[in-house]
Amino acid sequence: MQIALVAAFMSGWAQSLFSGSNFGGLSGVVYALMGYVWWCGERAPQMGINMPRGLMVFSVLWLVAGHFDWFGMSVANGAHIAGLVIGLLMAFWDAHHQRKTSA
Image (cartoon, rainbow, N blue to C red; front, side, top):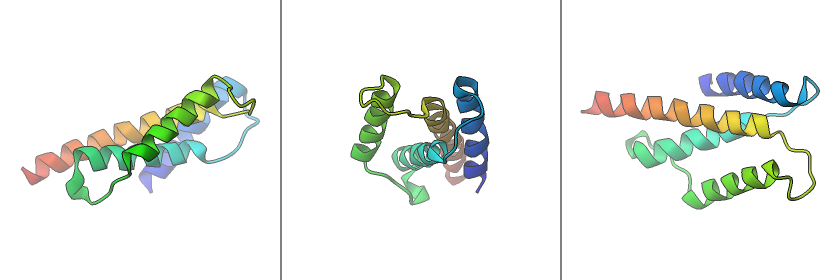
């Protein structure tokens, strides 16, 4: 629950810096959850969550495609990048503390 709330607030704030307040969606939260699950699966498999690397690679490629506007779509790049960073940071924190408590 915490990751969803933090990611929603921070990714929304980041996107508002780029496009103003006229946007909507939860894609920043989705990127945060993907980053969290992927990093925890890689660094702390004992947590019991994981995501295939291929899906993470595709997500990052899709992020790059959105950034360079390869498909002519309006994409919330600020929210996506902020969400991914938040998810990775929270996963790093949790995986680090998981290893400390299990050692």
